[in-house]
Image (cartoon, rainbow, N blue to C red; front, top):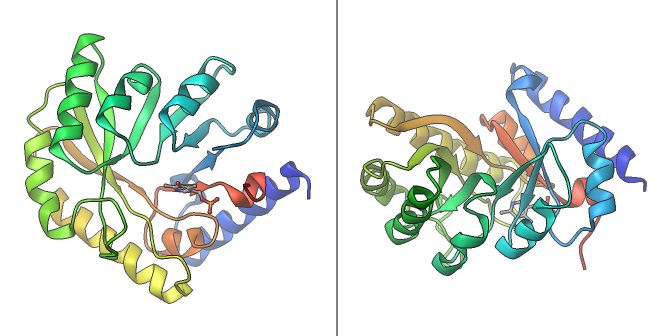
Length: 227
Ligand SMILES: *Cc1c(COP(=O)(O)O)cnc(C)c1O
């Protein structure tokens, strides 16, 4: 199917899910996950008003960054410390910070170029062993530690649900992230806001929207399957 039809369908689904949850669709930012996809597809999607794109590999983000203007890049995948240098001057938001060591590297690199880097803390709500993300019970400690770093601002939380989960099971995971964000918000930590909840992918973004997502990361639903 044509990519622009896919995009229309996804937008319609976002609107529907928002309405079902009694939310305004404008509260939900669509991040088009363009990993492995070529620039012509990205430009096509951008021409339809999408301005936020997500990549999970730092070098791929860096390569694509130079080839299109007026879009924002989100690093959504696992980030190794030695790759921070590729994206520090390019990423609008890093969704996948889950350790103080990684945050320290971001702090160091951001300081060097005089940037304040916005990040999300990735939380492993489902508890799956293979998954990155800080354990929910360790999130507050990590956030307090990172909040002391002057070139980083924590803007919210991110999670990934479990492949194969039903709508209700996904919703429970996402509600867990929302609950954690509310708890952290009440602590009123300096330099920390909980305005963004990045959750939901192609197969589960409706459940995420019902649970309060402000950013959904949709790849396959827009660009088609990846090899
Ligand atoms: C690839 C990826 C997505 C998008 O997945 P789709 O199922 O293709 O929508 C979202 N979030 C992260 C972290 C990803 O790596």
